[in-house]
Image (cartoon, rainbow, N blue to C red; front, side, top):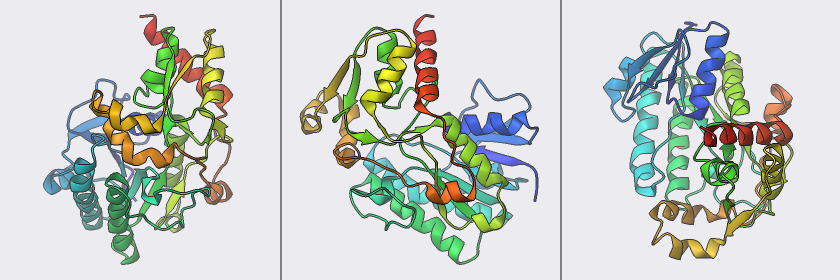
Length: 314
């Protein structure tokens, strides 16, 4: 297998993955529309438009493996139109080149679930964003089952970490606490909810990149720290930076009205099922095959809160 790994999307998980790979000397190319300012030393960059098949093919030339870790605007129409095209482009490009594909995914394709989510749960047709993720999943699964390429998905729940501003524990969570304000949380902060720490997500991606071919052809769930409530997690961070925890809980029923004045919240309405019940992820398959020592919140939440405090002090 060729040594070069192409990482498409330099968001929190793509960035962590790139730095991990470069720390051990693995050749890395980062590809996305704009060159980031903080590429790890020794990594190269190539512009790539994930919606353009030719651009995708050019971006992965010479790669033994490709990591797809992009994010899209949190808009159902954008997801419905773009995710099937993006997945098709990468499946076709990797099938043509022989590169293995690792897709960093979320858990939306399961839809509303009351039991802990497992990789074998059926795909949902619920809503726009969950249905779009389901369709993207069907595309890579069909290609994998047909033997056209080696592909695996690394699925994580809502993730958080230092510098992750759009997380529920980001600007409106630990970022607000670091500025002496109340953290804003959608739904009840007292329901048990699984969250993944970005360094654990990057570690899981690298684990799959290092895995033999028999680990491909299926999704894997990223291990999470033992389930806690958002209030517990925010309290850990608040104590780490020596501030009093205050939470402004935004009731789910209010999203319809609040989104009239804050359009960015409209995208959360169809995803209310993530916040109106306990949200648990079963990562036992990954734990049995690879590792299970996810970063405890006492470390992850504290580090994230301190990072936001350092930013607020600038």
